[in-house]
Length: 282
Image 1 (cartoon, rainbow, N blue to C red):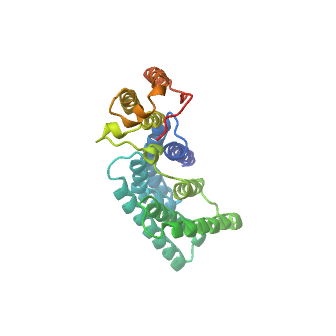
Image 2: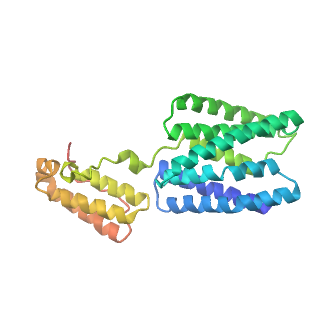
C-alpha cells in the first residue's frame, strides 16, 4: 500500500511536469512526461482502490481518486489539443464536485472524518473552478478567488488538525496538482501565439511561421515544426508576400537564419532561436 502511494505521488509529479511543459515553459520531453504520468495514474488508481477496500483503509480517498479519472484524462486531452477534452473536463469536474459534497454530508451525519471530507470538498471545488476557467464560463474569476480561499482554509485544517488525523500524501498531491491547474494553467504557448492564416499564405509574416516552428519543436512536434519552418523560407521567397517585399533588403539575413534553423531541426538539435540584426516589422 505504501509503495503504491509513492508511485502515485511520482505519477502526480510527472503529470505536473507535463502541465508546466504544456502551459508555462515548453521543453523537450514534456509531452511524454504528461502522457506517462496520466497513464501511471489511471493504471494504479483502480489497484489502490481494491487494496483500500480489502484493507478497509483510505476508502474515501480511493473513491475520490477513482472518480477523478475522467477529469485527469480531460486535462490531458485538453492540453494536448485532442478531441473530447472539454467534454471529459465538464463531466469529470461535476462528478468530482458532487461526490465530494456527498462525502461531506455523509461525514456530518455520521460525525466522523469531517476534516478529511472538507479537504475532499476543496478538491471537488478546485476541479469545478478549473472547468469554468478553461472553458471561459461566466463567474470563473470569482470562482478562482473562492477556490484560493478554500485552499487556504484546507491548509489551515491540515496544520491545526495534523495531530488528530493523518493527512495522506496522495491527498496533498491531489491538492497541489489541482492548485496548479486552477491558478497557473493557460492554453498551449503555440495556441496563444498562433497568427497563421492557412487560407491566405501570402498574408502571413514569415516570422510568424518561424516562431510557430520554434514553438512546435519546443512542444515536441518536429514534423509540423519542419512544415512551418519551410513555409517561413517559402514565404520569404514569395514575391506576393507583402511583408517579405516590404523588407526585401534584409531577406538574405533572414534566409541564412531560417536555413540554419532548418539544419538544426533536421539534426534534432534546434537549441537557439536566432534573429537577424534587423527584425521585419508588421
